[in-house]
Length: 373
Image (tube, rainbow, N blue to C red):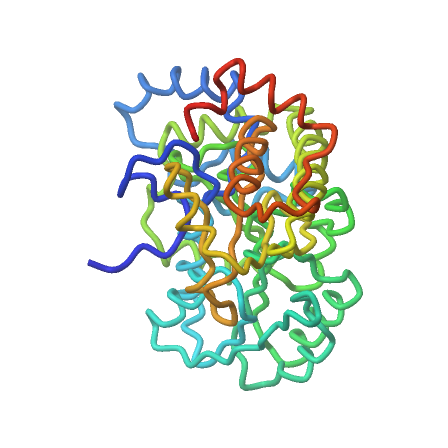
């Protein structure tokens, strides 16, 4: 059996808290839950293979024509469809990044060139990337913000990359599965990126907390290419419940803004307190997760408390001492910080939690933390 390489594997052991999967801590909205319940009766018929109503609503949201939208069984489904539609001979990927791009490209025997991001540069994509785009490169996948680093590509650089891809005939795929968590997401308007020739992938999974439903979509202005992508997968890839959940999610007018506010506040909190641990270095992130480097084996430490975190040892360019943690609820984040403080403390003042000592003591009195220690 192939080894599972992603977060969210809560099935191999009894996990109480899962920081390995980057899911919205606000959870599923009541509207989505109700839509899923209502959709059960409609499962006795085939789903709309063209997802007509859902594509129309997505088009309205993204300010693009309905025919530019194609829905799939999560972003991963669309990644494989795109690769099989292009059948690239040579592709360019950054490292580290989401591993499914590499797996999909390998499935068609594609030769892959890797552009290594560096820790010294904060894992940011630089202009040096442009020199690697030439007529031999058929396809490029860029995750924006990148997984697992959380970095966004600078808008000017992204524009230059799009222009260079048009010159070389390279198909540029931008994976925006995490972009809605960023406070500056508006700087990356889909309509403008599509006009530049890029293909955009997005997912409902992370923002709307429905990884088990499986729903994503791509946007592309090339009708002929869209037809090829559509033909590269099965007709009924998006189930009746998934389409219903998508429509309900798009009706949530303030859910995204509330989430961004919540995630931003919690990231500041985590950075403030985990940043005091001298054995841990945290990298800036525009997503709902944080990449950090630790001198101690964090994964092993947390598993003692049945807490999962994402080890990044299987990401190209990252080693055993890199980890990715999702931003969860404030109480969950507090538990994680408390446990790490307990396990990593060397008695130095650097671990002093400051004014949050009282809050931690109150949680202890309520028994919220006691059962984890």
